[in-house]
Image 1 (cartoon, each protein chain N blue to C red):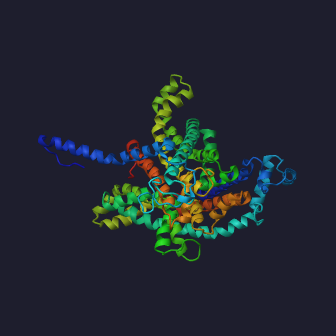
Image 2: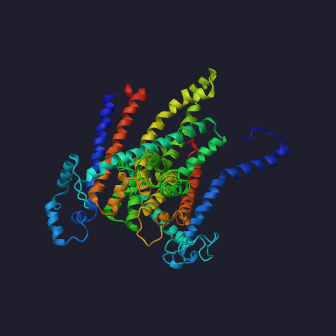
Length: 298
Length: 305
């Protein structure tokens, strides 16, 4: 905090100081955006970025360390796994799987949760009670237990993963949106809209939804990292995308047995996974600060 | 107070009924319940006769009533693999998982309490930044990856703790740290935020005005009031701990019910999964009930309601 009041001569340095502080405050956001962008670009241009087919085995060059270490080869920048597959190519393609499933699951869960939250908050009554109870029942179970139960019934596959992760997370969006709508529907401008004869769909979509949007954005930044982590956990447990598709969770699981001789198989995909989650968390925290100044957290 | 507890109790029964319906429905999500409950590769005639024998052709509600009646008596059917009673298999592993979850809770409290308090008491200091970093890492690091890295550092390299297994407290340390990482992050955040808010209240200013030292004010006046949401948060984390235990038990080959569940999924052993889901729900509902009782003890507003 700048407490000293200075005279005109110092105005320029003062302005400079303010700019500097503003920049430092935004540094986490900047870092988050850059890192997330890097991962997204990695996923989009996966085929162009990977020197090898991610599933291609080469037993001659199995368990090669990263290129900068002794015994590493330049054609395998991050080394190879126990089947001689290129770690870098697998990480890059793993980004695709992770972001695809995470993105689709969030779209699905968000669409269902936001729609139901709008309806429950607006109409209240029986709709609200039934949905609220349903949410309570679902949230009694830890998310991973719920997911495991459904994967057990449906069987592991890419589509089922999106379905399970998406439909499993509707509650989070539902609760946030419902609460906001309850407050907004009492505002005078909603009353005005009603008085001039707007239909309820118009009120919901034109007057309420835009006001709920910031909260939805916050919810997304909160739950996307969690969805990505859960998706990786399932792949780690062997209950996600079936092999040979490269996934970060799957790679970490495969490298477990070689952790004392070839740490890079498990550690490197874990680092990329962490960076992805961290990037979204950093963007999310900045957004929460901006959109919800009442919050007294960090 | 009794009215409150009875209401909460009834509500929890309702929630358990809901979870039981979900559990019941799992078998039907497979498409064909008869086929799902028989080993892969069973001839179709046999599946048909099994379907009639089990009554899968009857109305759903009748079947649910039967499922519920049996479940209440502790009968979830037998494991498709070992032919043992599914519920017994899960219950046998509950103590191990509870021990792990308890150790995880202890670890989470041991980290979050001092960090949260110090961060709030010295806002903007290095310890505040450290706490923020710990909280951020806790919610960022994937548990299973942390487990592998910890095994590499502390079991393979330093050989302080065993790689896997379950006898003695040494086996609990690493898995407890793994499952505590996310809850500890949330608890630190909450405690700090709660304390920061309470510290600006009038009664805290009064306490300072009386001439009390900062540690006394924080401990006697601020902390007590920030503790109610913290205790709620602790109870909510039980779900996270049980969920995290699934992954930790697999990595550390710890013989709890989470590992059993993952094995059951790999074997498509649905009765065991059903028993696991129900047992987890009962455990969490029990914790919630205990929490309600604790509320009545620490919060006079509920006691005199």
